[in-house]
Image (tube, rainbow, N blue to C red; front, side):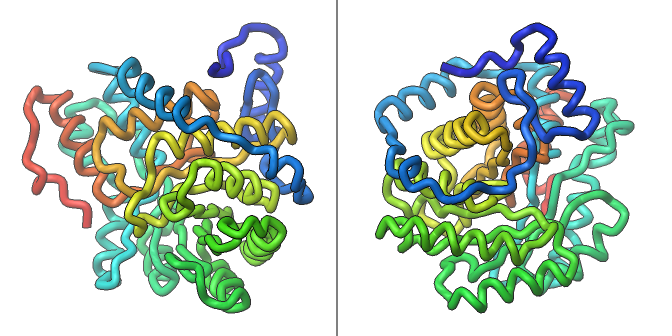
Length: 347
């Protein structure tokens, strides 16, 4: 059952005060939560993880069917989705000019004319981050200077994660030294298949140390992990090792972010928070292309984890094509007409 995040009383008010005064990162069930600093590996916890696949699938199907937002509420949710985006370009033909165009869109994701029609100019809506390869970190930093939009670099042998560990750690350090605010790392999937949880923990802990003050998002590549149970166990180990976020996919797997795997991962985040008092963020990446999908994911965050996880500091979309469809939906809200896709170029 979803946690009641609207429970009244002094505890909730006290927790809310702590959140807004900077003493905690989030609130779950009236309890203030700290940022994740990791805990020692608990193999008993990992081994006891179970997933009822059929129940997970039923839960996500009913959520999509019964949770919807319309009219002004829909526009508000779509604007929130924009603020939770990591605009991403991770192609072999990326160029500095493409990255600069993406950064310009990150600064102003909603066209000025449309923002005027919606009456949201004063909100100064912008995305959370721009995600690029290491070689473009400096380009993105210059293009985003003064905007408040973060630069995220994919690292640790992205997307396969099969280069030697020392090289992956060195790659992280180079991106941090270049100024990246966030690092998206990939795990060695074979550690999960072989149940080598200590090796996985040590790997992620080494990545965390190399990240320093940069936020670390751990990509589990759930489409490669074969089962929801593997995804759940990998989630737990990543959080124990100090992950700031756990992320579904690289976007390069045949199957990327799905609501069932998202539900499993968010419930592990909730259990970890309940057990440790620490909050871990969640990033859904790959295959999320429509405005309706973005509201489905936001609804899951609200129902499973509460209001705190509907903000960029704890929830992200890894998106390359999603923004265009959201803009089209917002234009329909403002004018009653859908615009052509070419009117909302991304980069």
